[in-house]
Image (cartoon, rainbow, N blue to C red; front, side, top):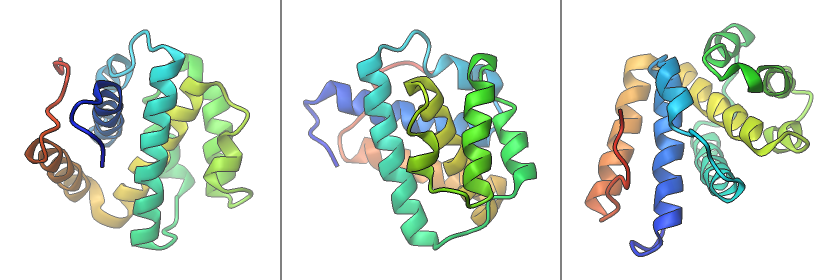
Length: 156
């Protein structure tokens, strides 16, 4: 996973999980506050963690469908300034025009973070349903704490 003395990576790990959880819980306020005033370095670390989590989930689940209706409903929670670019990317993925990495390649870092978090949330929703997907993510974050990686910030 990571070293307990690497605070930047631990912060990114938690922000990635909290952002995905906010999308799953349909909590627009939390979607916005998880990444309030992020610097580029933080966004890159969060993106890296989200991609690793998405790829592991994709490997575990195979290639579940990503219905446009569910993508649209989940993406509607994203900050307005990311909406157009991010929606274009996730729709390309849903239509299987490109893989996720290629779809988000030219986007601003904040747009890439939201697009990958949304795709991850939709994969979890499609395979587990909302309640089980939230439980899955909760179990993952409990495991972070058990491994000695407590959340480095307070969730409001």
